[in-house]
Length: 470
Image 1 (cartoon, rainbow, N blue to C red):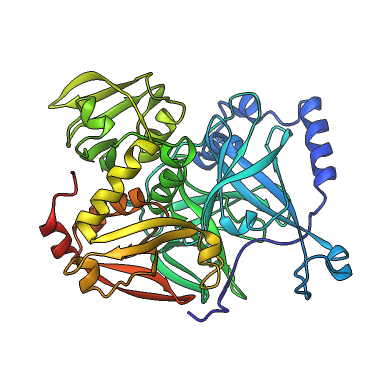
Image 2 (image 1 turned 135 degrees about the horizontal axis):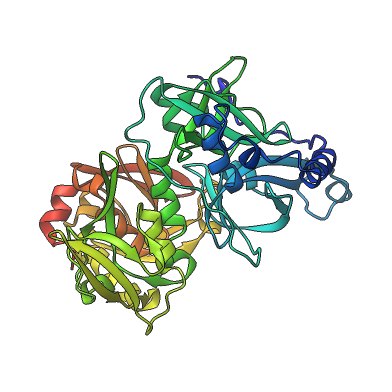
């Protein structure tokens, strides 16, 4: 597809929010909006109705403001102060009861204020916690002072062409708009612009309109199976969503304890599903990690982490997000058919930084120093930082790949998966991914003389050097 074939489903104007909110409040008070009580035993309560009622409380409308683009290079000019504010809108979905909300990055990118509106009529100011520009995802947080209804997260690996799906979102400013359709196709690649390419998308004919960005695509069981992201410009019934299995990897990284709490647990897990049974199984337990100290082993199925039942990899981070060093978290696993209780004590990230630097040197032959976004902004404004190369070991995989002193390593790629490299432990996380273990080479991205370059590292050379678990 060309760069003008799709558009992001968002707009810059609010449509009757106050009127819709007043009507909702009056209707609820008058008892008009009581489908569960009135139709609980009715044949009208179809599977679609049940799915919507299950998922809708977890869907939020997002409104924001930002200034129009400036034509002046001087930030204190009169023109700058007179730039009009533009209203924007989108959709999000609650993925954690403590107020963590998933949406598209383009919905909240460079905005000056974010307000989140829940289906019950309440609204809260939100802040952006983490974002992944390549996946076009972001996590925002609201402090509601109460538990919020989190959506049930499903899987996309078993989606079928023709399967019924449902979208819920803030279409054209009409909050909580529901539409139905089917999965039209899978594994679509869509180019929106030179710097935004979507891969492995779900194509659906369920209506996706401006304002639906960041909202859920759910299955007939009310489970989240995609995040709506784009529509085909000028077409009817062609919309796209990020598959939830790809979203979960990005969301788990954005919500990782390493990013949000500066702690490390060492749990490297993958998801599987056999029939209706879902399992999260440890793929690897790094040597010296808190997970190893707790007695966890590869192949263990995680049943519960703290207060959270584990059905996907995000649950691991959710369960350990409030864990602090010195106060072990209770873990329940299933090993050889038997359940076992363990206790995991997270470590501060600061304790592992030196170890990570040492291991990156031994594996890749790179001596690095983390640098902030300003050092790589000239190459791409989307980059959040990288690893400045202070030295390269002669004959190492990095030396053979022609990485040089002074380069800034900003990312690694295996297949359709891209990861940023802001800290040394990011590199180790990537090398331990199952997608990487199955590849022969690892594409790297570096900034050299303010330009973005790429090349390939030989995984055979890396794996021959030393075990990744050390």
